[in-house]
Length: 490
Image 1 (tube, rainbow, N blue to C red):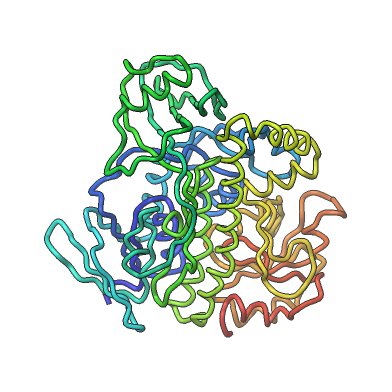
Image 2 (tube, rainbow, N blue to C red; image 1 turned 45 degrees about the vertical axis):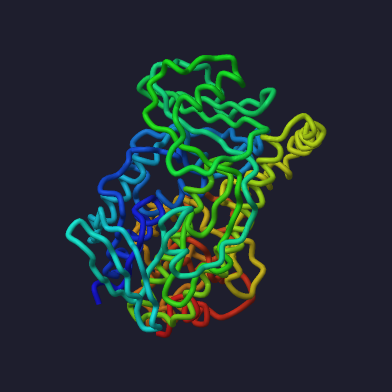
């Protein structure tokens, strides 16, 4: 074997997955057809849940000061993130290029082997290993690994070579994207609906504006490369009356409203994550965020299986948990596209939606959907509100030292967290046989709130991705059953 795992694609999802696998102690080779990062940044921010997972791995501090906002939108209609307590707000203006730089440094620092200029051209899965045919700067190579993961984007070579089905809707419109210097455009940060389409502009630093323009009426064009800037400038002029033709385009791109999702995220020893598994209209920049969360879900599971700590059936929970998330992603981005990019015929619906979104519960529901905070996995019997949800961020005191729930997850291990009224000494005894993969932590909450959901839980078993798999206060399966289910036999 050349590696236990081959990851194809050095975008955010692939780099995150490589880092997660190294946290689990798994040798990983990441291959990327581009010889160097493009520096382009389709994604320009993080949702609240992504801010949390980056913080869990100690990566958020690497970004320095991040501008966050409690304000967002759903299809161009405002939503208020402040309705949810104790969360990271969404981040704006964080370039995808910077994220890739930080993740690459993290992954290689943990020992990931990133090979650039290596392009996958063929693969086969014989049931015991995957063989990858790769074109490299030094000629054709053949690599073998126990598993291969496609994180190679919406036009995924892995998905096509492995025969994954990718059904969905055909594109009905095309949107142009460009970073343009020297135009000093009026900010339209969430986009403006104008006669004939939509125009968005936002300053991203250094005298550069991010421009997105969508013109209704023209069918999408099948393209072999990025659109010429002149075509984008003409569309911008028609919709806004502004001339950006004299600006300096740093790069251009285009995308459509096509929505597709792989019918399965795993076929034998080949799996998909990120845009390789789902494509959609980039409403709210959710694609990059969901891709990172796919990687977080898959990484620790694959690591446990490769290291022989858990049965291969644990990998089936990756599809079971993340495919429904992808379905909701396609649903909400399609809904936003209809609200934002349709013509006058949608105005009555926008008015009704605006009234509904003024209701706190509706606002809360939509915030949960687009932030990733609504996710609840089916992690076993029990009715406690924490079961299957992410561990909420809380300040803790452990052995007279202040810390937090986020810091406990830095090493990518399981946590049995006892906040003083739960499993006690019994938990230490039951979890002892899993000490090589689960840490038992006794802590107290710094906030004296009797109604706090974590305090009421007493003790919780938390997976390496931060989701609660067992709650002491909830009747359901035993702790040892939950430990075996998620961390393998003792």
